[in-house]
Length: 316
Ligand SMILES: C[S@@+](CC[C@H](N)C(=O)[O-])C[C@H]1O[C@@H](n2cnc3c(N)ncnc32)[C@H](O)[C@@H]1O
Image (cartoon, rainbow, N blue to C red; front, side):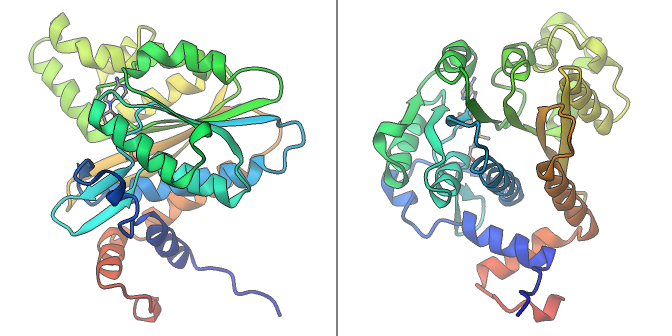
């Protein structure tokens, strides 16, 4: 009998359930967690979705000898959803789970986290779901360690999925990422569009004096001073993506936006240009379209998750 194709809503709901913590991860380092507003659930949903497709595609590559997951802003492994009694799994934990499902695809999971307590919590949490000898957590600023990570994960038959989950403009700058963009690695970057817009306006009202421009100049890199010409939030986002494209890369974004709840950001996925069409990219376009078609999805999903409603009929 043919299996019923999953409705996109059903798929996202299933995905949101996957990213919620049942207490196992939280309990590994009680009280140490990142705390963000509820739209983080959608960021994590899109990370999980992208990691899952990556693992599925890579596990069938005969040329692949060593596969790595690199998270340059790893967090603590656990996120509390602000004003809710909900905890979600952080991006490195999701990567470990996705990798486990594929028979431990990632030879190593390498993370960087600048805050000591978070780095320690992340290490304990990762070791609870992945073999200790395959876990590395560096406690330093990502920009200091990128060259070492590149060395550790390069070579014939190597491939990696890199995640750069910005919270604002802090963290490695665009110039720091160039060596990664130049190589055949897949990269997920969070673009906090609204925060970038605020940082742009901060500099603009100060007539772009050098100090007020520091954060944006680092974020966009030396080769992209055009951020000063921004006319809207989307301009900044498109500029950043085009900057990535100039490194012979394809970019697709999943836009997560809701004017009522006042948030606007994107997760952007990029890979080196290839001749053939990528099934990966198709999947990302599909997720983006879905978030657009159902702008009230965040509220519906949160209600469902909180009340543990699994019957979909009333919304379909
Ligand atoms: C948005 S959070 C990451 C959340 C994580 N991806 C998750 O899903 O749980 C960004 C993290 O980057 C860390 N951070 C900030 N600047 C950094 C830097 N220069 N290098 C490494 N980590 C940094 C922050 O302490 C914070 O925990």
